[in-house]
Length: 257
Ligand SMILES: NC(=O)c1ccc[n+]([C@@H]2O[C@H](COP(=O)([O-])OP(=O)(O)OC[C@H]3O[C@@H](n4cnc5c(N)ncnc54)[C@H](OP(=O)(O)O)[C@@H]3O)[C@@H](O)[C@H]2O)c1
Image (cartoon, rainbow, N blue to C red; front, side, top):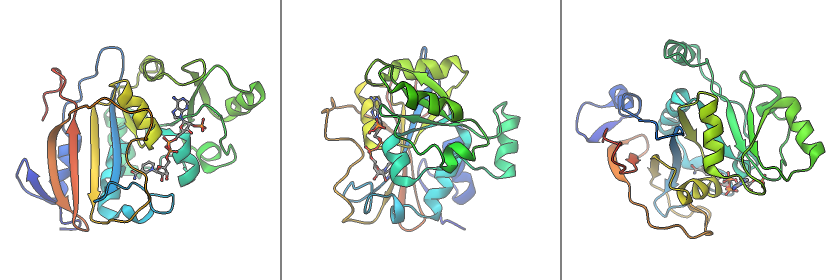
């Protein structure tokens, strides 16, 4: 088995079939907004970065899950801090993945949507200069007009707040564009924003058996979040002694677990 995936919960055969646990599940769209899924990898100590990058926290097996969650997405949402730290490029999918998307009625590749207040983005980067699908920039009213005009040359701009992006406005704007599934790739500030608004429906978490990464965890230190509980929908072992966990928010309409 290439990645040695073993289903722990619910039990069943391993490897390729494991991906159906991510793919073939209901994600009922909440009223007025898309389903929001976040995908993270973290060490045993909860660290989500090594020297400022995801780097060696991830693995080939984790990248299979990462790629699938991109393939399923109508839009890949990411905070500008992660875009800068990881030097984000556009989503790239192979021909088979693009064909599967088209069969599902989706465009071949989902756009990346960057959440930013500062508009401090490298507009010459591959994300903006070399994207098969025009990126989105989700920002606020109070921005430098010249910076905004420059961004508009290379991306569709969504204004979703006066001085900070409000999740409800951002997600409503994505709904208006027909987007039903948001895959959010972090980082901590953006996830904290979504959790603070109780708008995170699913957390796909890869636990990798390392300790000693950066003192940076999945959520930001501020603002302090209310306690929110999630239900375990599946657990899979595989890769380099990793655990692949899928948690869903226990709202009445979520019944795929
Ligand atoms: N292990 C993992 O799975 C994983 C995943 C993702 C990221 N990471 C790591 O996380 C680190 C980056 O963390 P981060 O907290 O800086 O990243 P982030 O959440 O990706 O980005 C923070 C930025 O998002 C924008 N933002 C956040 N909330 C906003 C709001 N309400 N309105 C408008 N803009 C808002 C701001 O951009 P502006 O400054 O442009 O205004 C803010 O500086 C990196 O080390 C990265 O490697 C790890």
